[in-house]
Length: 124
Image (cartoon, one colour):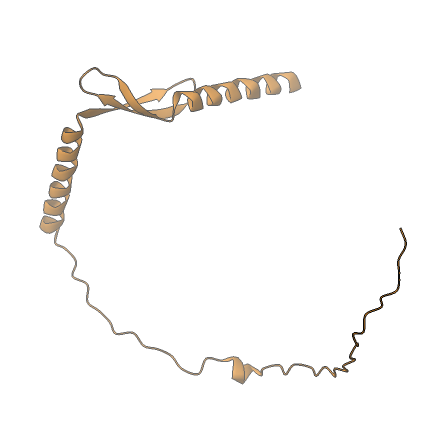
């Protein structure tokens, strides 16, 4: 491979730049010059009776929603994985619709726990 000189007719222009240092701001110039004051707005705090009424209404809405879904929630504790498990079950046949964490995730956690135990035993 050979490199040939360029035969172009273009010209190169030279420009000289004299950089000037940037001016640093003095502490007085760095201080904020104006403050914005926001109006104070009074927020009405609900009374305990109003809070209780709102909570009851929210609970009723949640229960209505769960009833319409025809599902049940089941909470359990998996001792092997040392984790809480939540299952969404069908009311018709008890089939597991969703499990959190999934069975696969629980199996991975159990396997990691077993491997950790083996590593610790080998070091001891």
